[in-house]
Amino acid sequence: MEGGGREVVLPGDLLDSGKLKAGAGTYVQDGRIYAAQLGIKSVKANFVNVIPLGGRYIPSPGDTVIGKVVDIGPSNWFIDINSPYQAPLHVNEVPWRVDFGDTARFMNIGDTLLAKVLMVDETKRVQVTMKEQGLRKLQGGQVMEISYSKVPRVIGKGGSMIQMIKTMTNTRIFVGQNGRIWLDGDIESILFAIRAIKMIEDNAQASHLTEKVREYLESATKKVQVEASN
Image 1 (cartoon, one colour):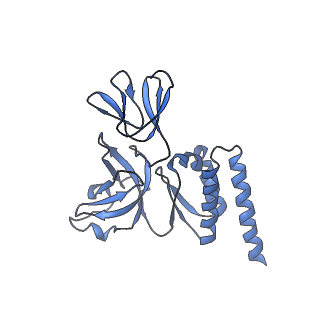
Image 2: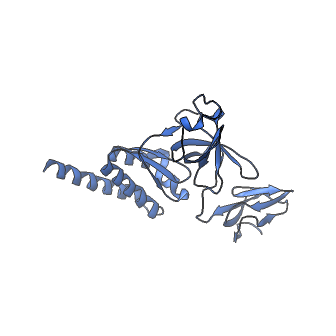
Image 3: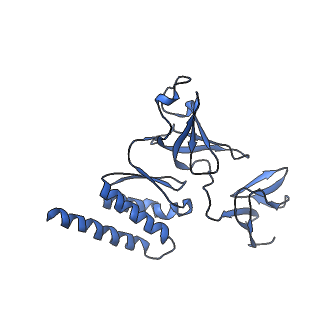
């Protein structure tokens, strides 16, 4: 297929036999490039890519993600990162000194954490880490999920959109590249922030979106202030 030709491909579909380079959403086996996910085949600047059609988040090294502990072993935790691939977190990749078999004392099934994707190999085995600054176990709060493809819009240019939501609702928010968002604050403020984020997800292509979100938050918070003063 030449230039920008496009077709829908399934995981495992052969994309190219060696003329092109492997791009995003692909993997290489025996010199051939295959689709790693459901999406649209796109050829650009000698790279073949698969642009995801909605679907699950596909991890990349360096991504910050919000995960949930789904299983525990003696020397690691198994983390659900909203992806088709489970992500083990080894005791060497956490900020605590954990003795063999003592993992449950630090994090248990159901716990939520902010982590970073450390490595993804050719077979899509994923490893995550909590060793970098700012990564932590998330206490309390609420987790919401949006389409991971809308995450850049929620964050905004230079973090402008999410900063506005944090400031106007007075909530603490962490946004994971995997489409999970953790929010903490009083219940009403969290609700306003969730509605604003849903508004962005539903209208991601709209123009003047920042202004619309600001208007919504201004009217919502003003209403609360009026009710509180009565």
